[in-house]
Length: 225
Image (cartoon, rainbow, N blue to C red):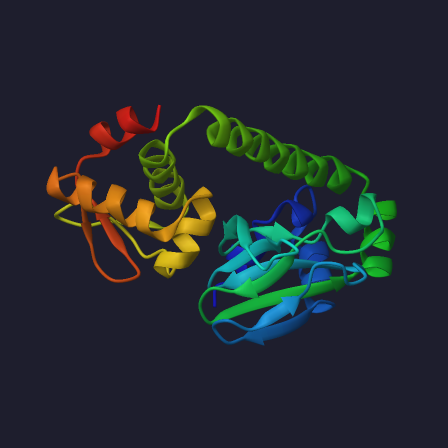
């Protein structure tokens, strides 16, 4: 694993290299298997996490057992920081989409670092603001966009973080099952599969198990609007 991926997180912004190294060394490394739960919704929240490898999903479950995925996070991204600014139970369940490595920092350690490096708090609040903006966009999409539009937008969003350029197009190894992809866009698996099949028939994408190759970004971007 490249430590620079972890050190790119907002937590380490504005710190000198020696300081980031000390903070990084104080963090606990946790390895997760696919499907393993890191923490559950409702549990006490007193830890912040930075992803070093793999992907983590944040989701919520309704009383009748239905699940909604709030986001998929990858290397260099941070989660759990809400507990610093609003201590209380976890608002989502975090589990590994693929084999993953995360680095954990306790609440008291984090508070001590922010007291000596106040600029870090600003960067963390910026990260929270960006997440809130994405949440607002998702809520608007659920109201104003149809399922194919939401699927196109989700594929483009995943491609920005996990896409790899190939000779044929942009390959996105999202590691999601069909059910998880449906939960991410707030629709049934059947409806999402129908949208993907239509995109494939039009030559916009090619499906490869838990990956998809985006062949026509322009058409997808238009459909996502």
